[in-house]
Length: 99
Length: 270
Image 1 (cartoon, rainbow over the protein chains, first blue to last red):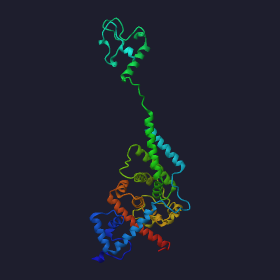
Image 2: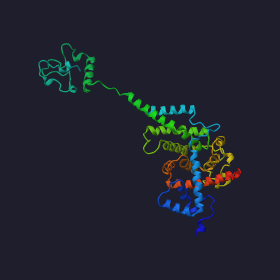
Image 3: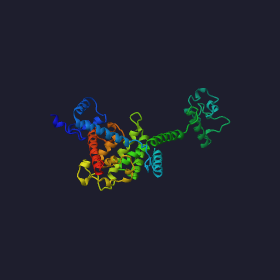
Image 4: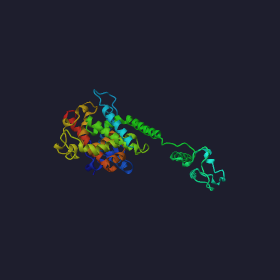
């Protein structure tokens, strides 16, 4: 039975637990689903490897959302251009006038 | 009305003809004796002297009807100050989260700076409308999540229809399979727009992989994994159930893994 579900770890979880393992990697599972996925991952090398890989990938994605501490050669503008800022202020003023 | 006028009465009659309330004072009334106008004195002109006199007593009547207090014109200053405060509060909110919004917009627009700035500009106008209408509840969630939600909704509603895809793709032709779909339906890494910006980011392979995902999957990953929104917030933003967000995230994360492996294999890294 184990041979059907526990195959060589290649970074992908077992097909029937794909969504649960993905949710377990970001901590959004709770209750019986969390217990089941955790117990399965303990006994399944494939899902355990997938869990580690998904958590590492999630950390890389979170780093994309954080401000960069290393200054790149030409950093993207952190604010709107002056023309767009002026147009935005004008639009807000029009909204205030309309009431 | 002057106090003296209020107390004037026909010298030949008693105070019953003294008006109990200013509102019903009628100086043109004739006293019961019918001998003299009620409100007139020797020093005042008779009411029948013309419209000027009638205008005067009407003004005095209006004055008394306000309980003797000076009339208050509608204050324009308090309304203007409230609008200015609201504008200042929203401006402060925008200054704090502007950089985050631009970062999200760049990824939504596949790193096209012009489109990202347009998207943020339009989204902030909509956000101000909602803010003025009182639809921002500071206790319901963070301001950043609220702004990101508005930005994403605007992107979904507007930019998916009008976006020009430099790789020759359209929303209709791109399958949800991403890299697993037919080769003609996904862009090669060299065709991704905004490549100059991508090369300056710290995690270029991941940015490439993100840009290759389909819209639906990329939005889920951006909102939950990159921007850190809760599943409920992301589901509300995208207008889908939480279970749909969960399943799309699972698919997207596995596709990203495959794309990253392909990227590394093409460059001989792994």
